[in-house]
Image: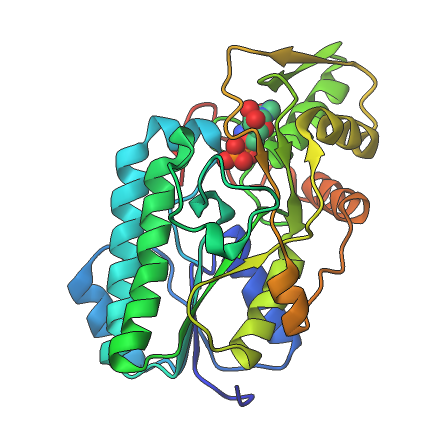
Length: 322
Ligand code: GDP
């Protein structure tokens, strides 16, 4: 990408999109195109096509999505399927029609079958049934990969797909009902410590294993892939290292300095038992993550403390996922 390339970051207000904008700005790209969702509804085909014809982006980072944690995914599956299918179909088709040079589509490692061998390799895609709690979201994300690959096959479009593991970092959603585990635990323990609350609830059994990638590392990988890789199929982006939710909760407790007890709530779903990515493909391409969990947690807790009261999802007692 040349320094004044016209680059559209779809979803620039979210955890991933905002990190991509920061990374592109740091690398000296000056011609970034963004739209808030209230100004451009990516589920609206006509609006998306008009936007692409008018702005003529050369590069597209597709980081716009309806996302959320395990509870949000199982509570609003229709929206997770419809919104994400529409966003992917509209943006990828409009990118083809308007002659975009290259597009990077972002998904998630929840596209892989629940019982796929761990660590999850890219070739596990479509080899078995999906995890029930995020099947709707996963099917939309699989459709987006297929769109990129079929537009590449039929029209020669240079559209690629990156599948990050569970992400965290500044700009995350801290709504306790809609968010993922890591921001939820940070918020619960900061609040509990302040209130002198003796216990914090952690959902499920604590035994599921998850991998966490700092979103600044993902943004770095996105720029790397955009500049250097043109291949069909998903490309995993992760650390390749996982830990149990119980271990994660202990790490968050240490980072926050919470002195109370952790209580596990088995009435909440565990989700898939293990989700760790095989990162040998992206390592072989030449990219490696930089930010370890301890450093990333400390950074995220500091960011949360510095931005408290103005953080996404924080004000919501009960809300739908956004
Ligand atoms: P998943 O990776 O798609 O399952 O998404 P989550 O990040 O929402 O959940 C990961 C795991 O953390 C699941 O086993 C949850 O039950 C567990 N967990 C523990 N406490 C919490 C919490 O407060 N919020 C969320 N979202 N998950 C939690």
